[in-house]
Every structure is written in C-alpha cells, then in structure tokens.
Image (cartoon, rainbow, N blue to C red; front, side):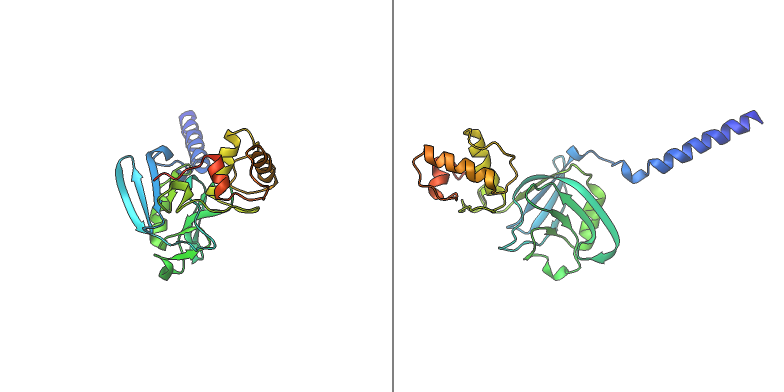
Length: 225
C-alpha cells in the first residue's frame, strides 16, 4: 500500500511539472545558433544555422514612405493565431527602438515581392509558420537595404521627428564626440537638437535644426560599401 501511494505521488509531481513546463517553451536550439539575413533589394529572407543555410524565402517590405528598418536587431516577442489575418498566423517581433516592426505572414499573398507594408517583413503564411517553428526569441536579425549598411543608399537630410537607422548613426557619432547624452534610439528629438546646436556652434556651422550634408561631413561620417 505504501509503495502504491509513493508511485501516485511521483506521478502527480511529474504531471504538475509537465503542466508548468510545456514542451514548446524549451527551444530545440539556442538563439545563437541561428541568423536571419533579410536583403530588401533582393526581397528575400535567408535563415542560417551556423554556416548552413536552412531556408530562403521571398518577402514583401516597406514602402518608400514607410520603409523597413535597416540594421541588426533581435527577435524579442511572438504570437500565433489559428485564423489567417493581416499578420498571417504567425508574428515575430523585432526590438527596433524607433517603432513596432516584425516578421509575419499575410493574408495578401499577392504583395510578396513588392514594397507594400508599413515597414514589417511579410512572408507567405506557410513560410512564416515554418520560420516561427525554427527560431527562438533572441535570434539575431540583420536587415540590409542598399550598399552602405545602415546608411542604405546614402546619407539623407534628417530633421526633427525623423526616425531610423541614419538618426541612430548620427546620435552615435554625436555621443562619441561628447555632445549627445541620450539613448541611441533612432528618434530625432529635443536631446538630439540640443546636441546638434552645440556641435554646430563649435564647428562653425550655421544653426539650422537638421543634419544636412555639411553636418554629416563635420561629424566625420563616410560611406563605405
């Protein structure tokens, strides 16, 4: 009788453990084993596991007025649904500091291969489901669009409320030179305006609240392929 009670107790403990630790909460591979490389010009997403290419899928990217963010990010959150909606059935969120972006499926498969989104990366629903099943949160995501890294196709004129990788590049340079004390968030706000005002005064540039070509030159930012 005592042995039977001990067996029942052991089974109860095991069942409780299975309830609080569902199998899908433990990824088969670590985030560091994977890399997602997105080439906006080629409209493709490639998944690598170490040096091995696991898969390559077509995508849709942001429009000219709502571009896809460029840079190096991480998958920070996710969700899935049973019904096909605007995000397909799977969504992988990215830790882009200046906005909400992700990799997801779509209920508009005809948009794949074009600049059609508000900045997110769209995939065919079945492809997004496959990617979702393979990569854990924390996976590195590299997005490129243009020959100059996060500067894309060349240095743009930045003005207050501008957002994106070029703003982050200017913030980093201003911070390195001792002018900017805020976070590198890719958002052109008051802190960046104040830093620019002091920088321009010290470098003999007329005060206009913007980053133009003369400002990029004074910051020492150059284009490298």
